[in-house]
Image (cartoon, rainbow, N blue to C red; front, side, top):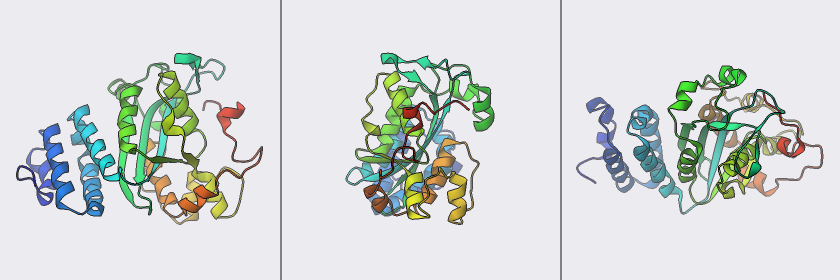
Length: 289
């Protein structure tokens, strides 16, 4: 225990001083949970606490959020974790006029929100991540993107720029992440944004499109099934609105839990030219909304 804070007391923190939780208090909280409960319970408890107190934690600033994400990654550092992630990105008004970042990379889209859910190797949800990104290259919010996501320019203006957000995302992912997405767009867009900012792309090296695993383990189809299709296939009722990065990542994680991820990854990549395995960005078939 640390400074008298225990796991039972933490559920009452918000009712005692909801707007006065400091980064130090959150740090003490994480220590108390980590050393007072078995690791499997740590995640379940902390995940529930974080979900309930996320808006309050945000008021504590970047230092507090970094502590939260670092805490989550510490528990996972000695084992592989699946990171189911989704992104929302702003796009040029015209596909023929993409902006260029550092190293001359053309940006098909500038990331404006990253959402992710961590799954253990046995498919249990262990934590979540969600942050918006302040734009640098596409400062004007595409009308179609704004209508689709509901994200406002005020939200983006109040957020950190991509390098700071990515550092927090990387901390959340831990040392040995396996990235899982629903669709081929997210990883190439992430890679483009990393290069545009002069950052390393190592995090993209182990990534898999769950659409291919879903197809292989269901009807063997080659088409791009929507996430809504997969949810319906497994009888999963969507709990949250779509086109929010964390919401979509969460629903994707629910689908992932129904798949044999280890087997799917081992057999991944067997497609031929013209099938689902081709990346749209690699074939110039990716366009703005």
